[in-house]
Image 1 (cartoon, rainbow, N blue to C red):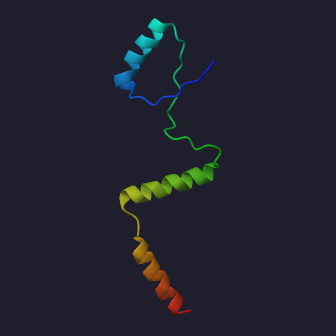
Image 2: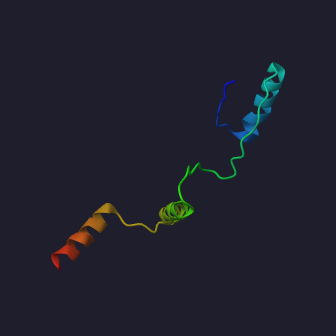
Image 3: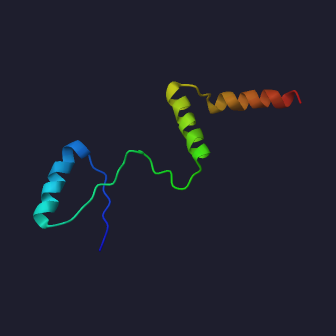
Length: 79
């Protein structure tokens, strides 16, 4: 037996795929993709930290590389 994994547009493609598989006599199951990302075996704290960082980026709560480097250079001058 071989496993096939495919990402599809569920609303658009699923009915067509189901019809084709049924005509071919292919058994299939849909994986639950409610957790939209595969985090592997990362600890929950790491996942939450990554999600918080992504939310910060989307909300514009970020600094450019240039800004951070200039800020750190200024801090190091005063050590």
